[in-house]
Length: 460
Image (tube, rainbow, N blue to C red; front, side):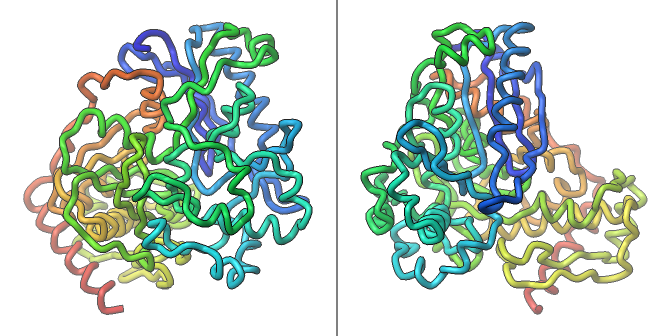
Protein backbone atom coordinates (compact mmCIF):
# COMPACT_ATOMS: atom_id res chain seq x y z
CA UNK A 1 0.00 0.00 0.00
CA UNK A 2 1.50 3.34 -1.05
CA UNK A 3 -1.54 5.59 -1.26
CA UNK A 4 -4.04 7.02 1.19
CA UNK A 5 -3.69 7.88 4.86
CA UNK A 6 -2.49 5.62 7.66
CA UNK A 7 -3.72 6.20 11.20
CA UNK A 8 -0.93 5.50 13.68
CA UNK A 9 -1.80 4.72 17.30
CA UNK A 10 1.29 5.78 19.25
CA UNK A 11 1.21 5.12 23.00
CA UNK A 12 4.33 6.55 24.62
CA UNK A 13 5.13 6.50 28.31
CA UNK A 14 4.36 10.21 28.68
CA UNK A 15 1.67 10.80 26.05
CA UNK A 16 -0.82 8.84 23.98
CA UNK A 17 -0.99 10.04 20.38
CA UNK A 18 -2.95 9.43 17.23
CA UNK A 19 -1.24 10.58 14.03
CA UNK A 20 -2.47 10.52 10.45
CA UNK A 21 0.33 9.93 7.95
CA UNK A 22 -0.03 10.62 4.23
CA UNK A 23 1.64 7.71 2.50
CA UNK A 24 2.65 9.56 -0.65
CA UNK A 25 5.29 11.52 1.27
CA UNK A 26 5.06 10.22 4.87
CA UNK A 27 3.94 13.65 6.08
CA UNK A 28 1.95 13.83 9.31
CA UNK A 29 -1.14 15.78 8.38
CA UNK A 30 -2.89 15.53 11.76
CA UNK A 31 -1.82 14.68 15.31
CA UNK A 32 -3.83 14.60 18.54
CA UNK A 33 -2.47 13.74 21.98
CA UNK A 34 -3.51 13.12 25.57
CA UNK A 35 -1.39 12.57 28.69
CA UNK A 36 -0.65 8.96 29.53
CA UNK A 37 -1.69 9.46 33.14
CA UNK A 38 -1.23 6.40 35.34
CA UNK A 39 -4.23 5.30 37.40
CA UNK A 40 -2.93 4.77 40.96
CA UNK A 41 -5.08 1.72 41.66
CA UNK A 42 -6.53 -0.51 42.88
CA UNK A 43 -5.10 -3.08 42.53
CA UNK A 44 -1.81 -1.40 41.51
CA UNK A 45 -0.71 1.53 39.31
CA UNK A 46 -1.92 0.82 35.79
CA UNK A 47 -2.49 2.43 32.42
CA UNK A 48 -5.76 4.20 31.62
CA UNK A 49 -6.59 2.01 28.65
CA UNK A 50 -10.31 2.87 28.64
CA UNK A 51 -9.55 6.58 28.55
CA UNK A 52 -7.11 6.00 25.71
CA UNK A 53 -9.64 3.83 23.87
CA UNK A 54 -12.31 6.54 23.85
CA UNK A 55 -9.71 9.11 22.77
CA UNK A 56 -8.50 6.89 19.93
CA UNK A 57 -11.95 6.05 18.61
CA UNK A 58 -12.96 9.72 18.65
CA UNK A 59 -9.76 10.63 16.82
CA UNK A 60 -10.17 7.90 14.23
CA UNK A 61 -13.69 9.12 13.52
CA UNK A 62 -12.54 12.73 13.07
CA UNK A 63 -9.56 11.77 10.94
CA UNK A 64 -11.70 9.62 8.68
CA UNK A 65 -14.40 12.27 8.28
CA UNK A 66 -11.84 14.91 7.30
CA UNK A 67 -9.23 12.97 5.38
CA UNK A 68 -10.10 9.30 5.07
CA UNK A 69 -8.28 6.46 6.83
CA UNK A 70 -6.97 3.61 4.67
CA UNK A 71 -5.33 1.46 7.36
CA UNK A 72 -4.29 1.46 11.02
CA UNK A 73 -0.92 0.67 12.57
CA UNK A 74 0.17 0.68 16.20
CA UNK A 75 3.36 1.56 18.06
CA UNK A 76 3.83 1.65 21.83
CA UNK A 77 6.47 1.78 24.52
CA UNK A 78 7.92 -1.51 25.69
CA UNK A 79 7.79 -3.30 29.03
CA UNK A 80 4.04 -3.77 28.88
CA UNK A 81 1.70 -6.64 28.15
CA UNK A 82 -1.99 -7.38 28.43
CA UNK A 83 -3.40 -10.48 30.08
CA UNK A 84 -6.51 -11.36 28.07
CA UNK A 85 -9.32 -13.44 29.57
CA UNK A 86 -11.25 -15.95 27.46
CA UNK A 87 -14.11 -13.53 26.87
CA UNK A 88 -11.64 -11.04 25.38
CA UNK A 89 -11.49 -8.59 28.29
CA UNK A 90 -8.52 -7.83 30.50
CA UNK A 91 -7.92 -10.45 33.19
CA UNK A 92 -6.01 -7.78 35.15
CA UNK A 93 -5.12 -4.11 34.59
CA UNK A 94 -1.97 -3.41 32.54
CA UNK A 95 0.76 -2.73 35.09
CA UNK A 96 2.77 0.50 34.97
CA UNK A 97 6.37 -0.66 34.60
CA UNK A 98 7.56 2.03 37.05
CA UNK A 99 5.75 0.32 39.92
CA UNK A 100 8.16 -1.26 42.40
CA UNK A 101 5.99 -4.29 43.09
CA UNK A 102 8.14 -6.72 41.08
CA UNK A 103 11.18 -5.79 43.19
CA UNK A 104 9.46 -7.33 46.24
CA UNK A 105 9.96 -10.81 44.80
CA UNK A 106 13.23 -10.08 43.01
CA UNK A 107 15.14 -13.06 44.37
CA UNK A 108 12.42 -15.51 43.40
CA UNK A 109 12.31 -14.10 39.89
CA UNK A 110 16.08 -14.10 39.51
CA UNK A 111 16.03 -17.81 40.29
CA UNK A 112 14.03 -18.54 37.11
CA UNK A 113 15.03 -15.80 34.64
CA UNK A 114 17.34 -16.79 31.77
CA UNK A 115 20.89 -15.41 31.61
CA UNK A 116 21.91 -12.39 29.55
CA UNK A 117 23.72 -14.63 27.06
CA UNK A 118 20.36 -16.22 26.17
CA UNK A 119 18.14 -13.14 26.00
CA UNK A 120 20.40 -10.10 25.57
CA UNK A 121 18.22 -8.59 28.27
CA UNK A 122 19.82 -6.95 31.33
CA UNK A 123 18.30 -7.30 34.78
CA UNK A 124 16.35 -4.08 35.32
CA UNK A 125 14.54 -2.53 38.26
CA UNK A 126 10.80 -2.36 38.90
CA UNK A 127 8.80 -3.84 36.02
CA UNK A 128 11.20 -2.93 33.23
CA UNK A 129 11.70 -6.63 32.53
CA UNK A 130 8.29 -7.75 31.33
CA UNK A 131 8.93 -11.23 32.68
CA UNK A 132 9.36 -9.74 36.16
CA UNK A 133 5.98 -8.03 35.85
CA UNK A 134 4.23 -11.26 34.94
CA UNK A 135 5.99 -13.17 37.71
CA UNK A 136 4.92 -10.59 40.31
CA UNK A 137 1.34 -10.39 39.02
CA UNK A 138 0.96 -14.16 39.27
CA UNK A 139 2.57 -14.10 42.73
CA UNK A 140 0.25 -11.42 44.17
CA UNK A 141 -2.87 -12.97 42.62
CA UNK A 142 -2.55 -16.79 42.64
CA UNK A 143 -5.73 -17.23 40.61
CA UNK A 144 -4.68 -14.86 37.83
CA UNK A 145 -2.79 -17.38 35.70
CA UNK A 146 -5.87 -19.54 35.47
CA UNK A 147 -7.94 -16.56 34.28
CA UNK A 148 -5.50 -15.75 31.49
CA UNK A 149 -6.40 -17.04 28.03
CA UNK A 150 -3.69 -15.20 26.09
CA UNK A 151 -0.75 -12.90 26.85
CA UNK A 152 -0.21 -10.19 24.21
CA UNK A 153 2.43 -7.48 24.04
CA UNK A 154 1.25 -3.88 24.24
CA UNK A 155 0.99 -2.87 20.56
CA UNK A 156 -1.03 -6.01 19.99
CA UNK A 157 -3.39 -5.18 22.84
CA UNK A 158 -4.65 -2.26 20.75
CA UNK A 159 -4.61 -4.34 17.58
CA UNK A 160 -6.66 -6.98 19.41
CA UNK A 161 -9.22 -4.40 20.47
CA UNK A 162 -9.54 -3.31 16.87
CA UNK A 163 -9.66 -6.77 15.26
CA UNK A 164 -10.26 -9.45 17.90
CA UNK A 165 -7.03 -11.20 16.79
CA UNK A 166 -4.33 -12.03 19.36
CA UNK A 167 -0.60 -11.82 18.65
CA UNK A 168 2.74 -10.68 19.97
CA UNK A 169 5.41 -9.00 17.84
CA UNK A 170 9.12 -9.70 17.67
CA UNK A 171 10.21 -6.13 18.43
CA UNK A 172 8.17 -5.93 21.63
CA UNK A 173 9.24 -9.42 22.71
CA UNK A 174 12.85 -8.42 22.04
CA UNK A 175 12.62 -5.31 24.24
CA UNK A 176 14.36 -6.47 27.49
CA UNK A 177 11.44 -8.77 28.35
CA UNK A 178 13.50 -11.87 29.27
CA UNK A 179 10.89 -13.76 27.21
CA UNK A 180 12.73 -13.86 23.87
CA UNK A 181 15.98 -15.25 22.51
CA UNK A 182 17.03 -12.70 19.85
CA UNK A 183 19.82 -14.92 18.57
CA UNK A 184 17.59 -17.88 17.70
CA UNK A 185 14.43 -15.86 17.03
CA UNK A 186 12.40 -18.00 19.42
CA UNK A 187 10.92 -17.73 22.89
CA UNK A 188 13.39 -18.09 25.74
CA UNK A 189 12.98 -20.64 28.50
CA UNK A 190 11.07 -18.13 30.65
CA UNK A 191 7.52 -18.68 29.31
CA UNK A 192 7.83 -22.32 30.39
CA UNK A 193 9.12 -21.27 33.81
CA UNK A 194 6.19 -18.86 34.22
CA UNK A 195 3.66 -21.45 33.09
CA UNK A 196 2.46 -19.41 30.11
CA UNK A 197 4.13 -21.17 27.18
CA UNK A 198 0.72 -22.34 25.95
CA UNK A 199 -0.89 -18.93 26.54
CA UNK A 200 1.49 -16.36 25.14
CA UNK A 201 0.18 -15.32 21.74
CA UNK A 202 2.18 -16.31 18.65
CA UNK A 203 4.90 -13.90 17.50
CA UNK A 204 4.30 -12.03 14.25
CA UNK A 205 6.30 -9.60 12.19
CA UNK A 206 5.24 -5.97 12.79
CA UNK A 207 4.16 -5.57 9.16
CA UNK A 208 1.79 -8.53 9.17
CA UNK A 209 -1.89 -7.71 8.71
CA UNK A 210 -3.74 -9.11 11.72
CA UNK A 211 -7.17 -8.56 10.25
CA UNK A 212 -9.80 -5.93 9.57
CA UNK A 213 -11.61 -3.78 12.10
CA UNK A 214 -14.51 -5.27 14.02
CA UNK A 215 -18.03 -4.29 12.91
CA UNK A 216 -18.59 -2.26 16.07
CA UNK A 217 -15.42 -0.25 15.40
CA UNK A 218 -16.59 0.52 11.86
CA UNK A 219 -19.96 1.62 13.20
CA UNK A 220 -18.39 3.79 15.92
CA UNK A 221 -15.82 5.55 13.70
CA UNK A 222 -17.31 5.48 10.21
CA UNK A 223 -14.25 3.66 8.85
CA UNK A 224 -14.80 1.10 6.11
CA UNK A 225 -15.45 -2.40 7.50
CA UNK A 226 -12.52 -3.80 5.52
CA UNK A 227 -9.97 -1.34 6.97
CA UNK A 228 -6.82 -3.42 7.67
CA UNK A 229 -4.96 -3.33 10.98
CA UNK A 230 -1.26 -4.14 11.06
CA UNK A 231 0.37 -6.09 13.87
CA UNK A 232 2.33 -3.19 15.38
CA UNK A 233 5.82 -2.37 16.60
CA UNK A 234 7.84 -1.24 19.60
CA UNK A 235 8.32 2.54 19.38
CA UNK A 236 12.12 2.68 19.22
CA UNK A 237 12.08 0.15 16.41
CA UNK A 238 9.48 2.24 14.61
CA UNK A 239 12.02 5.06 14.66
CA UNK A 240 14.69 2.72 13.34
CA UNK A 241 12.67 1.20 10.49
CA UNK A 242 12.85 4.06 7.92
CA UNK A 243 16.62 4.12 8.27
CA UNK A 244 16.94 0.36 7.91
CA UNK A 245 15.15 0.80 4.59
CA UNK A 246 17.22 3.71 3.27
CA UNK A 247 20.66 3.98 4.90
CA UNK A 248 23.76 1.89 4.36
CA UNK A 249 25.43 0.47 7.46
CA UNK A 250 27.18 1.41 9.60
CA UNK A 251 24.97 4.00 11.28
CA UNK A 252 23.17 4.56 14.56
CA UNK A 253 19.74 5.87 15.41
CA UNK A 254 19.04 7.68 18.68
CA UNK A 255 15.34 7.63 19.50
CA UNK A 256 14.45 10.27 22.09
CA UNK A 257 11.40 10.65 24.28
CA UNK A 258 10.86 9.57 27.86
CA UNK A 259 13.62 7.10 27.07
CA UNK A 260 16.69 7.74 24.94
CA UNK A 261 17.42 4.54 23.01
CA UNK A 262 20.63 4.27 21.00
CA UNK A 263 20.73 1.51 18.36
CA UNK A 264 23.83 0.66 16.33
CA UNK A 265 23.43 -0.98 12.93
CA UNK A 266 26.58 -2.58 11.53
CA UNK A 267 28.78 -1.15 14.26
CA UNK A 268 32.06 -2.41 15.66
CA UNK A 269 31.99 -5.75 17.50
CA UNK A 270 31.59 -5.18 21.23
CA UNK A 271 30.82 -7.19 24.32
CA UNK A 272 27.65 -5.71 25.76
CA UNK A 273 27.64 -4.97 29.48
CA UNK A 274 24.24 -5.52 31.12
CA UNK A 275 25.43 -3.51 34.13
CA UNK A 276 25.57 -0.43 31.87
CA UNK A 277 22.02 -0.86 30.52
CA UNK A 278 23.19 -2.19 27.19
CA UNK A 279 21.00 -4.81 25.60
CA UNK A 280 19.94 -6.53 22.42
CA UNK A 281 16.82 -5.20 20.74
CA UNK A 282 15.09 -6.90 17.83
CA UNK A 283 14.31 -4.79 14.76
CA UNK A 284 11.31 -4.99 12.47
CA UNK A 285 13.11 -7.51 10.28
CA UNK A 286 13.64 -9.81 13.27
CA UNK A 287 17.37 -9.01 13.51
CA UNK A 288 19.32 -8.46 16.72
CA UNK A 289 20.49 -4.85 17.25
CA UNK A 290 23.03 -3.74 19.86
CA UNK A 291 21.37 -1.03 21.94
CA UNK A 292 21.81 1.14 25.01
CA UNK A 293 19.43 3.40 26.88
CA UNK A 294 18.80 5.84 29.66
CA UNK A 295 15.77 7.79 30.80
CA UNK A 296 16.87 10.97 29.06
CA UNK A 297 13.47 12.59 28.53
CA UNK A 298 12.61 12.10 32.18
CA UNK A 299 15.98 13.57 33.19
CA UNK A 300 15.40 16.54 30.88
CA UNK A 301 12.08 17.26 32.56
CA UNK A 302 13.46 16.80 36.07
CA UNK A 303 16.34 19.19 35.37
CA UNK A 304 14.36 21.92 33.63
CA UNK A 305 10.86 21.72 35.08
CA UNK A 306 8.16 23.73 33.34
CA UNK A 307 10.23 26.89 32.81
CA UNK A 308 12.42 26.40 29.75
CA UNK A 309 14.31 28.93 27.65
CA UNK A 310 16.05 28.34 24.34
CA UNK A 311 19.68 29.38 24.93
CA UNK A 312 21.25 31.98 22.69
CA UNK A 313 24.84 31.91 21.45
CA UNK A 314 26.13 34.02 24.34
CA UNK A 315 24.52 31.76 26.95
CA UNK A 316 25.90 28.63 25.26
CA UNK A 317 29.37 30.17 25.26
CA UNK A 318 29.03 31.13 28.94
CA UNK A 319 28.28 27.53 29.89
CA UNK A 320 31.17 26.22 27.80
CA UNK A 321 33.79 28.69 29.02
CA UNK A 322 32.60 28.50 32.63
CA UNK A 323 32.60 24.67 32.56
CA UNK A 324 29.11 24.65 34.05
CA UNK A 325 28.39 20.94 34.05
CA UNK A 326 25.72 18.51 35.19
CA UNK A 327 26.98 15.04 36.06
CA UNK A 328 24.96 11.80 36.10
CA UNK A 329 22.54 10.53 37.01
CA UNK A 330 19.24 12.29 37.62
CA UNK A 331 17.45 8.95 37.21
CA UNK A 332 20.03 6.62 38.78
CA UNK A 333 18.06 3.42 38.26
CA UNK A 334 18.93 3.19 34.55
CA UNK A 335 21.56 4.02 31.98
CA UNK A 336 25.33 3.75 31.58
CA UNK A 337 25.87 5.60 34.88
CA UNK A 338 23.32 3.70 36.93
CA UNK A 339 23.88 4.18 40.64
CA UNK A 340 25.68 7.52 40.25
CA UNK A 341 24.43 10.60 42.11
CA UNK A 342 23.74 13.72 40.06
CA UNK A 343 25.77 16.85 40.86
CA UNK A 344 26.56 20.25 39.38
CA UNK A 345 30.02 21.63 38.79
CA UNK A 346 30.33 25.39 38.81
CA UNK A 347 27.42 27.68 39.65
CA UNK A 348 24.13 25.85 39.13
CA UNK A 349 22.17 27.87 36.56
CA UNK A 350 18.82 29.26 37.61
CA UNK A 351 15.63 27.46 36.66
CA UNK A 352 14.22 28.89 33.46
CA UNK A 353 17.53 30.30 32.27
CA UNK A 354 19.08 29.66 28.87
CA UNK A 355 22.28 28.63 30.61
CA UNK A 356 20.48 25.80 32.40
CA UNK A 357 18.92 24.58 29.14
CA UNK A 358 22.33 24.57 27.48
CA UNK A 359 24.03 22.69 30.32
CA UNK A 360 21.26 20.08 30.44
CA UNK A 361 21.45 19.64 26.67
CA UNK A 362 25.19 19.06 26.92
CA UNK A 363 24.69 16.56 29.76
CA UNK A 364 22.13 14.54 27.81
CA UNK A 365 24.38 14.49 24.73
CA UNK A 366 27.37 13.27 26.71
CA UNK A 367 25.39 10.43 28.29
CA UNK A 368 24.11 9.55 24.81
CA UNK A 369 27.68 9.54 23.51
CA UNK A 370 28.64 7.05 26.21
CA UNK A 371 25.70 4.85 25.22
CA UNK A 372 26.87 4.90 21.61
CA UNK A 373 30.44 4.06 22.61
CA UNK A 374 29.24 1.03 24.58
CA UNK A 375 27.41 -0.43 21.56
CA UNK A 376 30.19 0.05 19.01
CA UNK A 377 28.71 2.97 17.08
CA UNK A 378 30.21 3.79 13.70
CA UNK A 379 29.07 6.11 10.91
CA UNK A 380 26.42 8.80 11.03
CA UNK A 381 24.01 9.36 13.92
CA UNK A 382 20.34 10.05 13.22
CA UNK A 383 18.46 11.67 16.10
CA UNK A 384 14.69 11.15 16.31
CA UNK A 385 12.12 12.77 18.56
CA UNK A 386 12.19 15.91 20.71
CA UNK A 387 15.98 16.11 21.10
CA UNK A 388 16.25 16.53 17.32
CA UNK A 389 15.29 20.17 17.95
CA UNK A 390 17.73 20.73 20.82
CA UNK A 391 20.73 22.66 19.44
CA UNK A 392 23.08 22.22 22.45
CA UNK A 393 22.35 18.49 22.47
CA UNK A 394 23.03 18.07 18.76
CA UNK A 395 26.19 20.17 18.78
CA UNK A 396 27.67 18.35 21.76
CA UNK A 397 26.71 14.90 20.44
CA UNK A 398 28.54 15.61 17.19
CA UNK A 399 31.68 16.76 18.99
CA UNK A 400 31.67 14.06 21.68
CA UNK A 401 31.33 11.25 19.12
CA UNK A 402 33.31 12.85 16.28
CA UNK A 403 30.45 11.73 14.02
CA UNK A 404 28.09 13.44 11.60
CA UNK A 405 24.73 14.04 13.27
CA UNK A 406 21.44 14.33 11.40
CA UNK A 407 18.22 15.49 13.02
CA UNK A 408 14.80 14.18 12.03
CA UNK A 409 12.41 17.02 12.83
CA UNK A 410 9.01 15.39 12.21
CA UNK A 411 6.47 15.74 15.02
CA UNK A 412 6.82 12.12 16.12
CA UNK A 413 9.69 10.02 14.78
CA UNK A 414 7.78 6.86 15.55
CA UNK A 415 4.78 7.70 13.36
CA UNK A 416 6.66 7.57 10.08
CA UNK A 417 8.20 4.21 10.90
CA UNK A 418 4.93 2.73 12.11
CA UNK A 419 3.18 3.94 8.96
CA UNK A 420 5.80 2.16 6.87
CA UNK A 421 4.46 -1.14 8.18
CA UNK A 422 1.63 -0.59 5.70
CA UNK A 423 3.89 -0.63 2.66
CA UNK A 424 6.56 -2.85 1.23
CA UNK A 425 8.14 0.15 -0.48
CA UNK A 426 11.16 1.97 0.88
CA UNK A 427 10.47 5.62 1.68
CA UNK A 428 11.72 8.26 -0.72
CA UNK A 429 14.52 10.64 0.09
CA UNK A 430 14.20 11.51 3.74
CA UNK A 431 14.28 15.04 5.07
CA UNK A 432 17.35 14.64 7.28
CA UNK A 433 18.89 18.10 7.18
CA UNK A 434 22.57 18.58 7.79
CA UNK A 435 23.14 20.07 11.21
CA UNK A 436 24.29 23.71 10.98
CA UNK A 437 27.79 23.59 12.38
CA UNK A 438 28.97 25.92 15.14
CA UNK A 439 31.82 28.28 14.36
CA UNK A 440 35.36 26.88 14.81
CA UNK A 441 35.91 28.58 18.17
CA UNK A 442 32.67 27.15 19.58
CA UNK A 443 33.58 23.72 18.23
CA UNK A 444 36.87 23.91 20.12
CA UNK A 445 35.04 24.86 23.31
CA UNK A 446 32.57 21.98 22.84
CA UNK A 447 35.40 19.49 22.38
CA UNK A 448 37.30 20.76 25.43
CA UNK A 449 34.11 20.70 27.54
CA UNK A 450 33.36 17.12 26.49
CA UNK A 451 36.85 15.91 27.42
CA UNK A 452 36.67 17.63 30.82
CA UNK A 453 33.22 16.15 31.52
CA UNK A 454 34.37 12.67 30.55
CA UNK A 455 37.50 12.89 32.72
CA UNK A 456 35.47 14.01 35.71
CA UNK A 457 32.87 11.26 35.31
CA UNK A 458 35.55 8.60 34.89
CA UNK A 459 37.23 9.73 38.13
CA UNK A 460 34.04 9.78 40.25
